[in-house]
Length: 334
Image 1 (cartoon, rainbow, N blue to C red):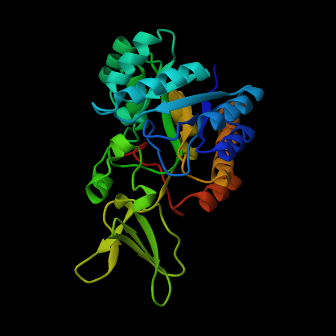
Image 2: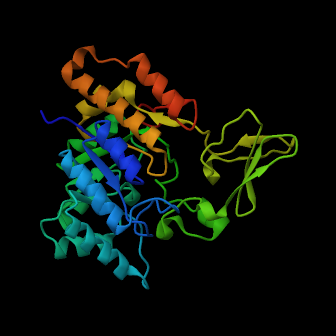
Image 3: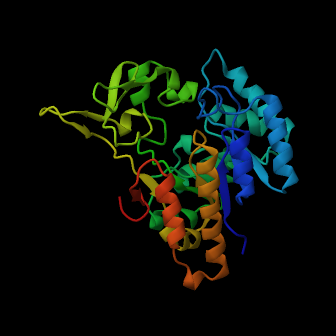
C-alpha cells in the first residue's frame, strides 16, 4: 500500500525549508503574481528564489507542486500560459490548475505533464472529476471542504483520479475561495487577482482604551479587546454590529480544520494526500503542522488498529491555529 502524502504549504523559502525538514512529502507553492490563489504581498517566489527552493527540495528527495489556480481574463491570459511553460521548465512534479482554458493549454502543449485539479475548480462529484480526467488527463483532484467521508468513499469508488483533501488549518466555507465577499468590499477580485482581503486594504487601528479595530477598505471587520487575538482579517470571519450594539460573528467563527481523529477513516475512504492550509502563514506554523501530520500518517501505517491522537499533537495544533477551537468541518456531518 502506497502511503498517503503529506503536502505542506510554502509561501516563502523559510516555510519551504521548514516543511521539508518537518517531514513533508511535497510542498505546494506559487509564483509571486496573480497566477496563484494566494497572491499576498511579500509572499511567494521570484524566479531565483524558486530555483533555490527547488534545489533544497531535490536535495532531500522530495517533490514540489506549482499552483497556477486563478482565473485569467481576456486581456491577460498569456501570463497564465507563460506560468505553465515556466512550471514545466522548472520540473514541477505537478501543476495545480483550476481554469478550463489553462488546463486545455497545459494538456495540449505538454502531454506528459502531471496535472492536478485545484480546489478552486470546486469539483465535488465523480461526474465532474471524470470530466476533467477524460478531457484534460488530470491525475489528482483537490476536493473542496464540503464533502463527508462517506461521500468521498462513494466518489472514489467511481473514479480512478487520486483524491487529496485538506487536513489542517483554515476552513473556507465559501465555495473554496471563489466567493465575492472580499471582491464586494475591495473591488479587487479574489478569483483573478489571487488574494482574499488583500493586505493593502487591511488596517489594524489601536482603539482608545486598548484593543484593535480591523478594517478592510474602511469597512470594520472586527473589534478586539486587549486580551483577544486577531483572526485572519476576512469578511467571512468578521464580527459585525448587532441591533444591540454588540459585535458578533455573522458567518463563521475563527475555528480551524483538524482531521487528526479521522485520519484512518479518510485513508480507508481512498484519500491519497493530506493538504495543510497556510501559504500565508509563518514558518513556525508550517513546521509544526507538517510535523504533526507526518507523525499522524506514519502512526496510522505503523499500526492502523491502534491509531489514536496523541496529546502532544493536540497541544501543537491548539497553540498554532488561528482559532483555539477545532472543527471537523463537513467530514462527518454537514
